[in-house]
Image 1: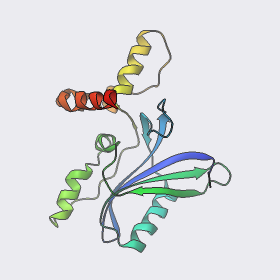
Image 2: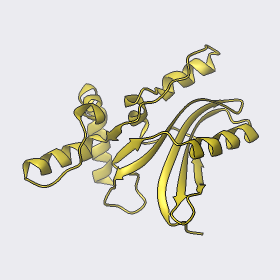
Image 3: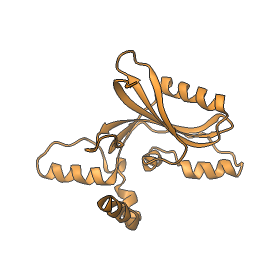
Length: 174
């Protein structure tokens, strides 16, 4: 059943049903295509979301990484899980910019090395393409969202431009 409301996502790294690291995010810059992940996300703390995810991973004894797509009902404020993807997610660079390096932490966990559980920063992240488009629009006197260079993927694209070009080519080819 369709639930009117807002999307909220939670990314986790777990070991035997215990959450070792997590981030929670909501979208603030939508993409043009239907059902596409937002181009701009805001990392937030949300006790209701993390409580639901804690219960799910504890009951299942989950190990590994998971990205949960969830929905907060506009009717009653409840949060419902839509789907769980047991893989790395498109916004993983955003998680890195707020202080949670999921691949590194997953390697440490796999090697049974201890680490301090990271606390993520509450801030925005805008992917490289969307940030560049918004900055061009600003130069054309069109309104744009407010965010800083540090809240974009541009610095990562500049460090590895071939990977960014490969993504653009893949999008063009379809």
